Image 1 (cartoon, rainbow over the protein chains, first blue to last red):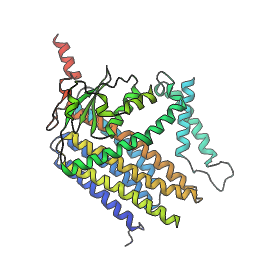
Image 2: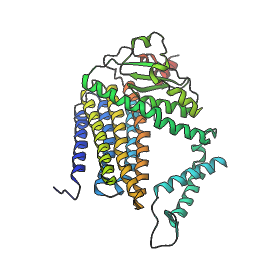
Image 3: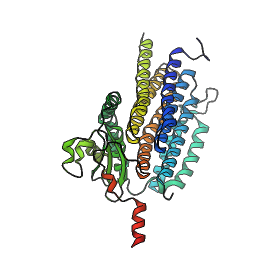
Image 4: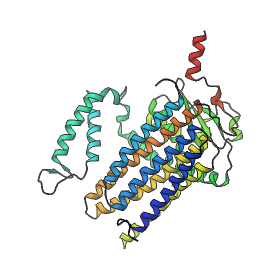
Length: 91
Length: 178
Length: 131
């Protein structure tokens, strides 16, 4: 099988990473309280960063790694803001 | 003045790392692995950032400029910290599979003075076996820790002894940051 | 020969990293409350990303040593991404744990909770206003 010229082994690895993203999405949907959902989102962010790097390796293009760096810092800032919002009080 | 030079230098090194490999084979204006345009642009940008951010980057002392501390930090990262992290993951794997937990929130007082030291200790505690930093007392620098498997003998003394939670990490951190 | 050996090492590192990331997903589903889920979601993904990024760094190093300058871009940029993950992941975990405790989530089956007695900023302000 040749899917956009990506070797088979990287397809398997990206599929397994997608499986763990799906487990985190189940937690986001089920989670009884709001902090539970945010924990799921934080885990999804980290896995997405790593799978961007692996996809860059599979596609042989280094630009995905730069996108991953920017995504890491932006997702960190969004997590901090949501945590501050849940905590209540003044900004 | 020293603060400005240090900030601009750190900025310039970061810029050089991010633009490594920009040398152009067709042009002869290359400095080893960088093209001359990137170097000029990086110099201008880092001088601007150094003027703006010199008071934010360096607060009081220049203690962390000592290279011995950097070597200690790198040794700490690849030695005790990495081993602690590997243990932590097998611990979490064991608890995921068996489901045995005995959680609680305890307070420890590591007696660190600087902000950098407290940050490093808190991050190390979060990534090592069975513990997670929840809150901090800003006046006394006490840490509140969620512990996944509370030991009975640790609860005898009321601010729980440091060695149950962080092992030897506080000594390493004190050597690096204070 | 050496090339194939390095390929095998890269595949082993990828397998270890993927195993720990899947462990994080299972932990998120199985644990009973927010704090224990944070244990799984933070530690396992950070450790898994060290191995996954390590495989990419190894790939770039082999490229660099064999004489292709593009390998240096792979090594340095993946290293910066790994440092970003290592710095931001535990800090985000502290922020979430503190927010969960202040918004009133209690740890399930806790033996001891010393944080409960600590006065928060809001209640301290109320006390001062009453005086």
